[in-house]
Length: 515
Image 1 (cartoon, rainbow, N blue to C red):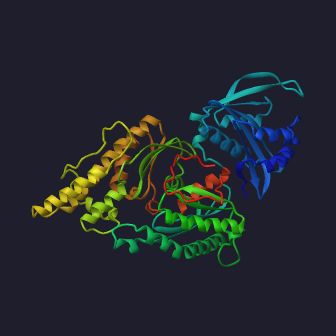
Image 2: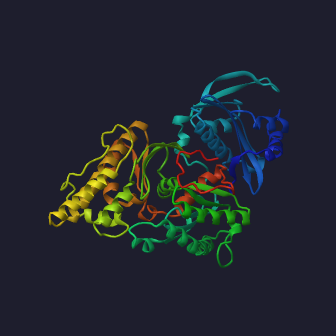
Image 3: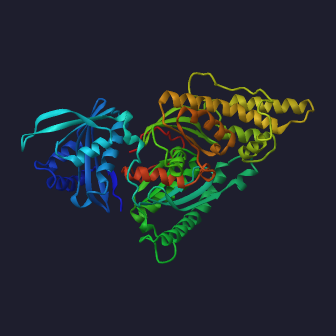
């Protein structure tokens, strides 16, 4: 079983000191660990397996430079990649706190440790004389630049065989997924509410909440049933002899806790908290937008930071920079309507039903994108903000004027021209973001990522820059729990937990630090 990396707590000090005592000639005492745990600028992590602390790492942040104080793994757990996992997690935490360079000392004859540090692009910059008091040995000083570290391009932590149940109820899909090892999807169930909302031309929050309440028990039961079948076929020892996978076989429970419709989020979060309390399994909270980005990570092993993601859906349109795993910076977002929302509203005026995006996209394929000169709002604004309200109004006014004049509307031409106005702005800003951030990968994410014109335009514009472009498969574009499980697996191994007192946050920001 893969050990989880989490923050060190006061109750871990005794176990940490015991590992220290058998690893180093002059070990720290329990008192020293306890005092340093509370010192300013310190980050201490532990690796835990089945409730037992089996490794630890500590760092000290001073301005924009961090120092690795120690890394150690229990002898029986060595050779399993825990040292790498601890160092990767420690570096990510220190980088998120502002570190741009990391330093450490190591014995010159500790070739295994030196090789590990070198794999993170750390290298020797000198010698610290008589550093080891017990022997009078010198220490090799090593440092590495966090911002350009090769570790940012590697998988954040070893995949292992962790089993996670993920729950997603942020809008109008009730979804549950079971994932093994961060990439292997053994169950994925989605119950859509589209038919219930279509008659209203959009999602009705009260109906969404009620339908989630009605569906969630059955959706999770079906996911556990499918997971039991899949794990038996795989020969996994945790699979029951028959029937559904038991909750006791899970390592953690993950849930979307924002952003989204607050009533919808509450249903999934309440159910997940109840499961966590009843089973004693840790709860991992996931930002819905991070889930959409991780849909690309799940489907495309070439996706590595530093990357830029364009997140486009019914409720969100934003450009996000991910310099390191788990670190996000929102470059810009819509000032009014989201792309998916604009598609739906125009489709509603045309009487094309809900959801409008797929219908308009199909019609646009038959039309002339240059037929109508709709505005490209904020194309040259000099920033990464989007505005789609003016475009939506221009399209609706065009429809009204044509109808008042008694002229038939060429819907394919209108759809193609409207779509082109959206795509042109998003592609222009995405290209500039990739160039200015130095990203090595670009991800398209969210429900509107299913739009063929947008997918093709982004590939055509960004791939010639030498940047890897990833677009998720169609079934991972819309809301689902598989993407939540992928994001949660990473956060689980980093030791990040959501408290049972946590509340749904309908306005949760992607760049909000998670602890």
